[in-house]
Image 1 (spheres, each protein chain N blue to C red):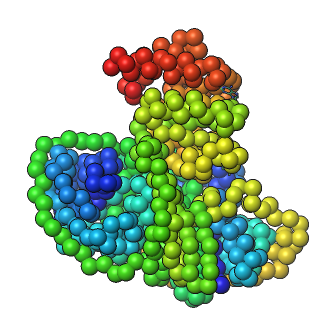
Image 2: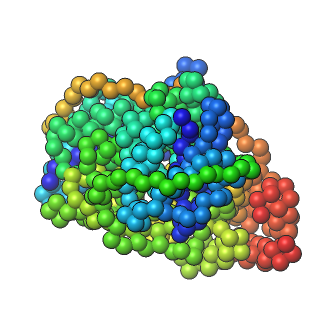
Amino acid sequence: MKILVCISHVPDTTSKINFSEGDTKFDTNGVQFVINPNDEFGLTRAMWFKEKQGANVTVVNVGGADTEPTLRKALAIGADAAIRVNTLASDGFSVAKQLANVVKDGAYDLVIAGRESIDYNGGMVPGMIAGLTDANFVNNCIGLEVDGTSATVIREIDGGKETVSTSLPLVIGGQKGLVEESDLRIPNMRGIMMARKKPLTVVEPIDANAETTSVKFEKPAPKGAVKLVSADNLDELVNLLHNEAKVI
Amino acid sequence: MSVLVYTESEQGVFKKAALEVASYAKAVANQLGTTVTAITINIDDVTVLGNYGVDKVLKVSNAQLGSFNANGYAETIKQAAEKEGSQVVVVSSSADSKYLAPLLAVGLNAGYASNVIEAPTSTSPFTVKRTAFTNKAFEMSQINTDVKIIGVSNNSFGLVENSGNASAEDFSSSISDSGVKVESVDKATDKVTIADAEIVVSAGRGLKGPENWGMIEELADVLGAATACSKPVSDLGWRPHSEHVGQTGKPVASNLYIAIGISGAIQHLAGINASKVKVVINTDAEAPFFKAADYGVVGDAFEVVPQLIEKLKAFKAQQ
Ligand SMILES: Cc1cc2nc3c(=O)[nH]c(=O)nc-3n(C[C@H](O)[C@H](O)[C@H](O)COP(=O)(O)OP(=O)(O)OC[C@H]3O[C@@H](n4cnc5c(N)ncnc54)[C@H](O)[C@@H]3O)c2cc1C
Ligand SMILES: Nc1ncnc2c1ncn2[C@@H]1O[C@H](COP(=O)(O)O)[C@@H](O)[C@H]1O
């Protein structure tokens, strides 16, 4: 089985978000980048398929050369090879077109992407890859088993979960639950050394229009101070929630 | 021309989000000088949609679409959009709508903006405001394609009543076999879900152990709220993963969010910041949550929560 894991390179969850150039660009100054958490769960699940079922795992990112350390980290965790599509990721649709092209080129059986990236929160790339490559698609995936060309997937739904059966080629939008938090791997020295020797191929992009353009960013208005209510006076809290906030 | 809106139902009843996206579609239609057409799947009584600005309803009745399947639903909505010549298609932010929207975008070759929180700021160029960086910022996004798909954030636009009548006609779509088959569904039908909840009661590691969640559930019951938790609580297995909220968990956009024994780490706050009113109950007055909250109680959850339950019961009894 050939697996492609899509890796989005995103600001670390503790990052303060600032903008530059008249609030039109995300300011990467002082920001540390990581593998998108949803992708890290997917990558870890891919490692299981590699170790238990002999799958071959390639990771891919659409982005500039600055994303290569993130791809190297994925190689250090255990992926066999990496691909970088050499263009700036502008919008979800154009990224999906680039990735769909990689999927077709490499004839991957299983594409693991994240339910959502934590930077632009598009929640669209995996579904679009599936649509563009005519593969089956399951979103919000919290469990995945593959047996030959059949797959059993557990999907989170509002208020519960459902189990679906499908077949390869398959694209999933993954999240926590694919593996547990405690299964995530920190690259060790040996992994880091080996990663240096693994292939990281840079491919040129295909022509793809940006269907949406980011024109400006805004930060939320600063919040007023908290109103403290004494623990002995909870009637006051009920009163405030009813009469002032009007939420109960 | 008309703006198409996909109005979701559950067990034959429209979801609140369906009425919210209908309200949103009406606002867009007003801007564009056109009407609103809703598409419904397997629901008989659609009259309520007229009250939220819908002019026409395309009713699909198809046993093949009896349980949700993203491809079949996306194909159906696509065919409706083509029939109506719609330039704008509006969907909600439910798990199902977020699942089908990217497929629909490919089908219609449409730009898709998700997590949109306001009516378009301009229709030419078509520009919408959406949340990005997990609620740490807003992005003004311009959609460049002829057909545009807008995913509206839950609880952001609100319901806007509009006395009107919606005409209804039957619509049938031709759908291909779904490659994804639902084998079993495991869903608590008697509980409010985080996605639909007006109020969410959430608790963290401050509660010390899973055995102490009885009072959290009781508080949620009194308020008709959904229960949620911080990430470590679900990682420790005290509560199911489905309750984990925050940047890497579920987003929360309720009217009221009550955080009990949660410190207020940046990753937690990012996911719940879209909630309108936030209350924190924590022993530590220095906990970062107090900077993000509207109301706070410095105190021990084991004392405060049971008392709050009593006060709320008394309050509810008076209503
Ligand atoms: C990549 C990454 C992603 C993450 N994503 C998320 C996420 O999506 N969601 C999330 O929640 N976290 C997330 N986290 C974790 C986050 O950083 C915090 O560790 C977590 O939110 C803390 O959970 P907590 O507030 O329950 O526990 P703690 O930080 O341990 O806080 C417990 C609080 O309870 C209070 N307390 C103790 N006893 C009582 C009592 N008797 N009564 C009242 N209060 C009491 C304490 O004063 C303290 O403030 C993420 C972390 C990382 C690194
Ligand atoms: N630039 C990118 N390169 C590779 N994969 C990406 C990129 N952007 C998004 N993805 C994948 O698509 C998922 C969802 O992203 P998004 O649709 O942007 O929320 C991510 O979790 C990644 O798996």
